[in-house]
Length: 182
Image 1: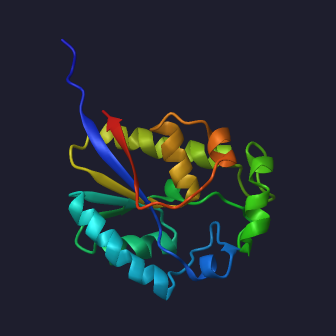
Image 2: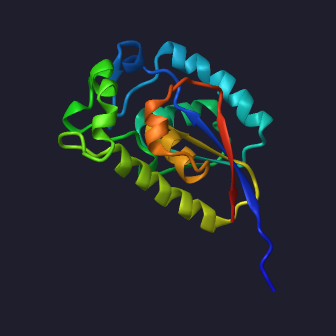
């Protein structure tokens, strides 16, 4: 007899606006800190979290994602995971964002100097997704992360192509969602 399939609703939100975002800096694996605008944005995120009945939050362990999650939903259990980090730009962490993002396709398979490739970043998010699947949660969960986290979720849960995602627009929106079957 086959086991019944369970599904978990997985929501994703990027961290709120940081001081680096406002200065057009690609923070990468640096911690980052929310700006005043970012701290105000966490109020709206908190409302979305309550409306979605989120039972737990998984966040990147980088400071800006942790700060976003803690301010938006201080009473929701928070679990930090390094696999949800931004792409490691290596020597380019903290560099001009236009420079870093203008060369994204070049680093699809080839790592940034001293860092990782987009493919490697998406792969580690995939490892997280598989661990989440094994938990077989029934309550909706929220992931708070970065561009690489969203790309990884879209590849591993949405079946999208990383190449198409890197070539396409990266417009912000108030949350992305997928159903994770367990």
